[in-house]
Image (cartoon, rainbow, N blue to C red; front, side):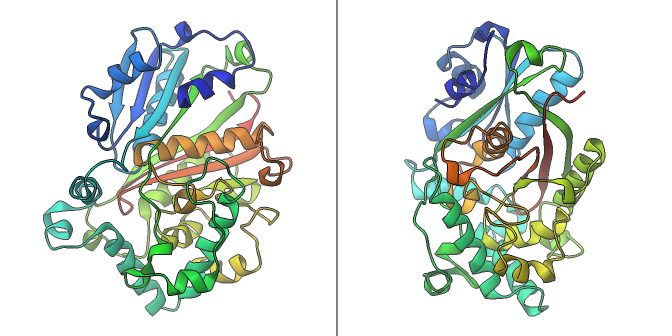
Length: 366
């Protein structure tokens, strides 16, 4: 369905034979779907001709790095048309297998073997930020409320139920101070985008969306090896590179899709993306600046928190959302960002060990 949706977005002149390379992001590598050699298997299932196909893995940033490979392949001139996709099947595997996947997204030498869960890592970050007075527990809850409100308008979102700050605070505790409503759900899903050379973009569409800038970075896998556990350096570096290439700053964006695997991660990302100082995040959230209709809507899809987080598909799905918003093609009028022309998608792997960022702009970008 995800690949078919990509085909449907092409206005004219489309044939699957035009695809020359396929890059598929997936953490599990098909284990949840009982598939081996995932990339060629999915190419066949999608009805594509035999082409070069590669599975890309970088934990929760697998989709973003799959898209990066497609962008680099086209930018290099080796191919004119590439398909970037992401997929994960998580909800019909055993709890043990699910915990294994999430465990290997972080450090296995110390964190995982010592019993630290993925939620536990972000709980440590949140605890430190609260201790320092940078954020409050209510600030985190407001992230969940905002993203659930957006998801309620998105028919493809997993959690479409509006919630309140009180419900977030009173939900069952997962890893203090994170409750169940601070955490993204375990999800199934897929997403796909076509990446084409600027010289042939108008062959396919009168409404192309260009990749104006992109960046990627990595950090230490273990949080304890970082100089500051409250910073996401890979996210900062990836976004800085994307801004520089695009020649714009965060103040020129019309919307953002960022990696809110836990509510505290969104607050931390505001700082790393240059949207605001983290100490200002709570007040700006309370004022509605990052909601639909606000100064800069963030995660209008519902984000990972409420739209869902099918790990390998997440980074590609963020770009699909911005693509549709810029083209004015969102099927739900209440969810459309008016006159959107530029957006940023930032996908993060693990607890910040890897990250990609893409600035998308209306029209062909050369």
